[in-house]
Length: 304
Image 1 (cartoon, helix red, strand yellow):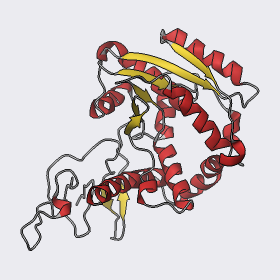
Image 2 (image 1 turned 30 degrees about the horizontal axis):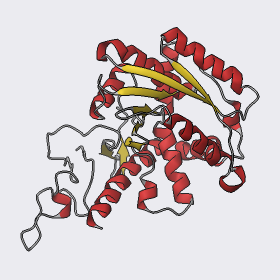
Image 3 (image 1 turned 180 degrees about the vertical axis):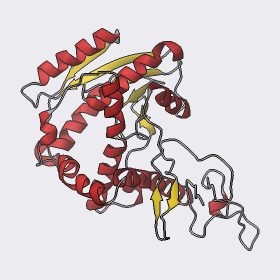
Image 4 (image 1 turned 90 degrees about the vertical axis):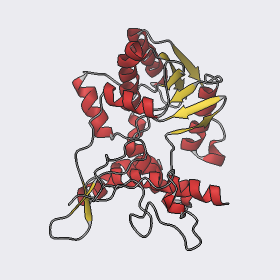
């Protein structure tokens, strides 16, 4: 027995249910109900918000997640770009920190640049918060030069730290700088991945957020004059690291990521290893829950 679905209505697989008045049930809307029941021979949905395949545990009880996820590659990235509607006609700007995730994204896009005729450039934001930040900016420029990808370094001043906290103030300054490089029709690509998504969901839970907050980071959203896309949300940090190792990539190791005073670092270094030890695939499960929350939030918005 194998159960496959991407958005389960409260009463199970009822993609054709009708209300007593003859009107189509909310969960019957094709845009909302993308259900694959055990008796269906259809393909499992894929994409940034597709849920994992679930199989029953031996002896009954809860479902467990299958481990047959698509490994990261430039080909799998090409599939994501296609699903997001990004093509040769879309100017792409990579937010390139030089860390593992953005390094993988940039190199994979470079592999696709000629076959997909992509228009590609990079922007590195130097926050000036670390003694090595200027060196990291030069390293980012060198990486882009080796790939023959135009790169701009934006040096920003992080202000309003007292009012927003250092992490949020730095993020605000970073996106303000990145926005200057996204014109009409352009798309900013960030390297957020499934583990980042899971961390965001848990942070939102701890803040007591509602369904919109639990939707966390969308795969595509309006941004400045263009859009912001996160094409790596399907993939875990481990998958990206595996591809980086295969490709012998070198990346910047920001030591501030080990600073446990920052909430996200504390979750990443202290909490998630414990969760993963007891509940394997916990990060991926939580990240996929964001997709369900996003669908619920969209439905609520339509009904409002």
